[in-house]
Length: 208
Image (cartoon, rainbow, N blue to C red; front, side, top):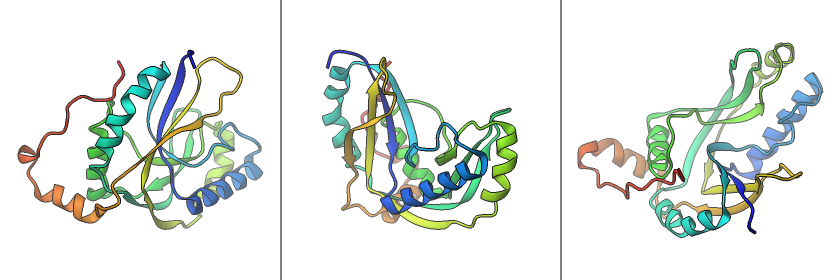
């Protein structure tokens, strides 16, 4: 493989959550008609690595895999739906409950990646026209969804930068450390002053 690839780093929820996301996407299509993100699988986006040579990414994987074993699986809660305004094209998403403990976990994960802050979410309908939003939001805003689930690995997807097939395929799935407990780990970070934390390797996977 000699061409460039686009990579997408995500947290993939369990199948039970994906099935519910699919159901809400199908309901949305029934209300507003087909839309671009209808068939994309539910995930929490972490970072994009556009236009990279596979040899660069392949070389990084052993180190990243080791680093991720310092993290426990993520325990997170879906709490209903929300939306980003995005001017004339809002995006509706399943809202992740943001707690002090999940914030600590995401902060620890982001040590291994460049980029600023982000809002963890699972997209239902991305960048839909305002008239479609006005039809769909009254339905989704009334749906009650409160469910806890666990994510035990980081998923890296990829696709050809230039090509007809724009769908992402799984490249690697890197596990978190299942021997670590999410609550014990994050609570220990709350109690530990930032100045006394042992620094992790400062090299980030920014890939220029």
